[in-house]
Image (cartoon, rainbow, N blue to C red; front, side):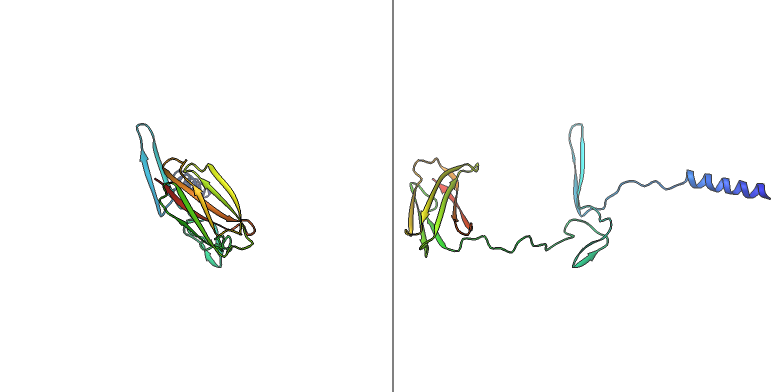
Length: 164
């Protein structure tokens, strides 16, 4: 009888070891793709499954990381320029006019960047003048970024300028 129980236990252990489940890495994702080339294949997914618990007001016990913690505010500070500025004509051929409203006592920095991000012009304005004219005649045709920054508050406004 002991022999029979022993054999049953050995048989059970042997069957459980040989018939054990195999776990493979599988992600059920919200999106992804497979890209194949001449000799390689790349498969990727967007969104990893959650392991554990994420909480940010609401709890998420299972699902995807993508969009799981939504609505996290890094800052509620407004970085837009408080002073009204008008830039004309756009597209520009030779001279670009910048018109300010209510800038008395303010200091501004005007910067122009080319399409590669290289700063090609900079000037500091003291709020005594309400108009500024920039000479674009020496610049080649293309797109430029004009950035006007209020020095005291570091708030700024950018304009896309097209030079014809």
